Amino acid sequence: MAEQGKKTDLGVLKINNEVIASISRNAALRVSGVAGIKSNTWSILKDLFNKGYHNKGISLEIIEGEVRVSLCIVVKYGVIIPEVAVAVQENIREAVESMTGLNVSDVSVSIGAVYCEQTEN
Image (cartoon, rainbow, N blue to C red):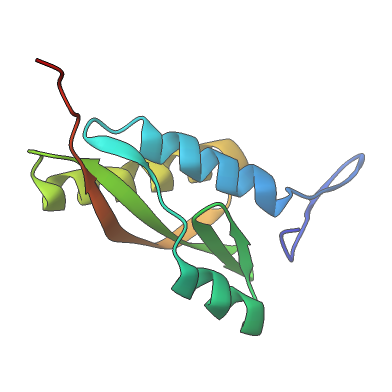
């Protein structure tokens, strides 16, 4: 769970890390040129030994209401990779902040693979 909950008149609101990861995943996949999210072995091992949250290629670190997101994407062949990566960063920041009210301080995007559709002749 996010380390800090938001106090309301009726109690405390806490947002599960899986919700933030899901928002991040959906925001990334909505970017044109993204074929998928890739879970890489290094990030899984890193998260086993460090604080944080990892789920299906999305890593989160939430400290004092600040969210740091890391993910590895698969891009479609022929796209301009830096443009796609920046669009992913912007989409994730906008989606997480608007849906959760948490501040996104960092979105790190790695390119894990290039997907090329095979056409049959």
